[in-house]
Image 1 (cartoon, rainbow, N blue to C red):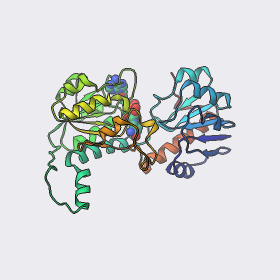
Image 2: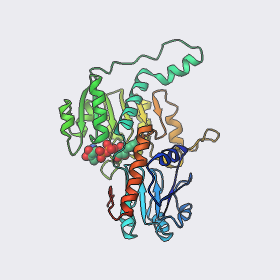
Image 3: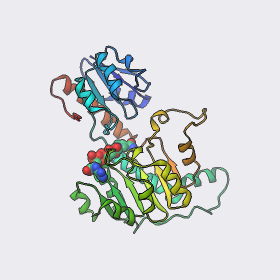
Image 4: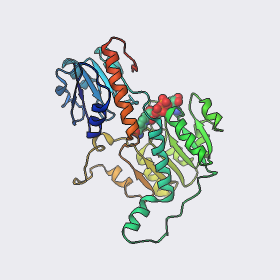
Length: 329
Ligand code: NAD
């Protein structure tokens, strides 16, 4: 049996080649993103392994099914990019990696907070240029600050634990409160109250029809002036043009993004020789109090190893007629 890995990077090949092999399964790595144009490459591959920016819309799934694919093995937790009713109609099974390392993403969110607060991105450039001045680098103590965690599943909990360690007060919002957060002293509030009270807000909920543009012009106006917003969830949790206006007015004091709504055409590629065509992203990158990383929060050795092991196990279990980690509409 053959599996085609779309959007595969050298680090994916390394981690999958090092994971326990599935007998009889050939792995084929393809750097191209999955799209209508590249779907025919899957001809003869019963398994297609896809990542977050691959296109798994109905027309693409139709092409894959026509080319003989039966299993879509997502090497991600998020599945908002899959047309699940279309997959069901076409008889395609979809599996995912529900948990790999929540610590990888939580720690990256904290890295963004620390870098923005202590202006490490500016200090790094300054000292390399021989500028050892400190003006404009004043930060604040995290100790005693109020941190709002939106979405308190695996990543939100790991994040909350770290922030509790800094001595922060924790606020939380989630339709399904997590007793482990309450044990850390977190107070669950309605989202509007959390947004009003928190000085730092970090988004860890999935992208759904309820969470799309959760942070928008109206909700930004209710934040504490100068608040910090961190998004390692999904790009469309925030209305990016509204963020730009809030940064311009100073209402938003700091912004750390690991995800961007239009990232699919941009992230994971070296585009340093090309003019950036996305004007919204280009504007964001002009602000000194904004850090954008290109969806790298998951990128730790431990997370890659866990993604590879679970994905191969998902394929083996599906082959044996005993599928696990199914994604159903
Ligand atoms: P999880 O399923 O463990 O937790 C998600 C939580 O969000 C759940 O507790 C759920 O009840 C809550 N939730 C659902 N709807 C909500 C809403 N309307 N408002 C607030 N909370 C809501 O998932 P996780 O493993 O913690 O991952 C969270 C998200 O992080 C994923 O959906 C994915 O989009 C994102 N993620 C990003 C990266 C990255 O590299 N940047 C990597 C992995 C996951």
